[in-house]
Length: 166
Image (cartoon, rainbow, N blue to C red):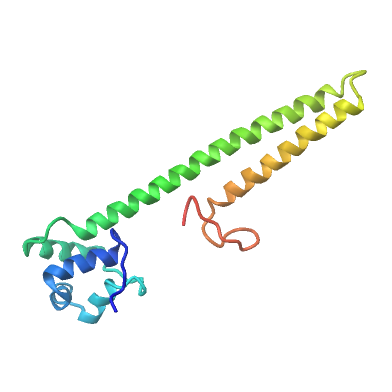
């Protein structure tokens, strides 16, 4: 049964190359075994050629009449996806930081207001409590987003994180 391989991945790129060169030829080019060359095309193995090997494979592929640069295209696509994801996380962090700052400012303003002579009333205290609770919720959201920038497994409780550096 043929395994389905996502396009613009390294395994897909190796399959494109192998359609022109075949696995024994790829193996000869990089001085490795055919079985290793085949493993590079299997996403389950999570193996891929080194940069030097990829360069040699791409050059041979082009020399044999192959179209494009499959490994380079896969690398560029994956890099772009990572940069876009990272940028989106940073924008979300900035948005959540702005909300957190706004909520803290509002809670502080109401809290300071009730310290003034004659300003304390059940209504003003309830208003301060509402604002403080909104700031607390915004802090939780902000903290969660910050944790997403830690490497996976680096959270204080061993939780998985993603976002900034994976």
